[in-house]
Image 1 (cartoon, rainbow, N blue to C red):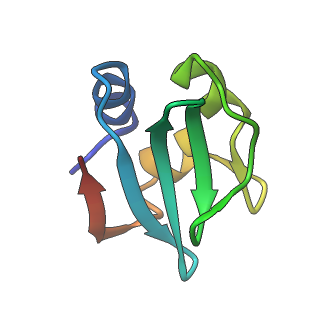
Image 2 (image 1 turned 180 degrees about the horizontal axis):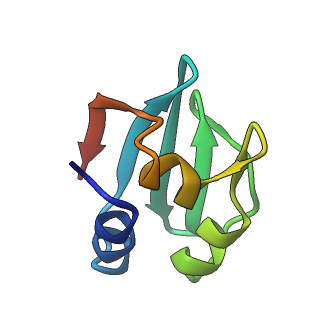
Image 3 (image 1 turned 90 degrees about the vertical axis):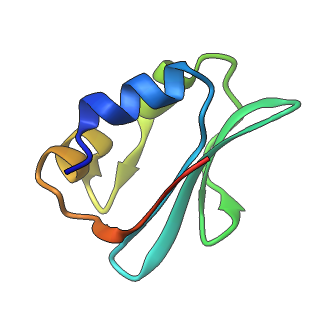
Length: 82
């Protein structure tokens, strides 16, 4: 099982993450402008230099990423780590 701690570790190493939750595809990706969070290929937050600061702000349907990953609410077979 992929945990929230795995997510943090992978992002700190510069890896990018995609996953499906509530029938939408979400991504945390790095662009030349900084880190971005998207839903169905639409950027939801301003770019951030620090990916950890970005993920602290993310809320999906009133749930934090910590909740979504600790409770395994995402579709596990949809997880893609780049």
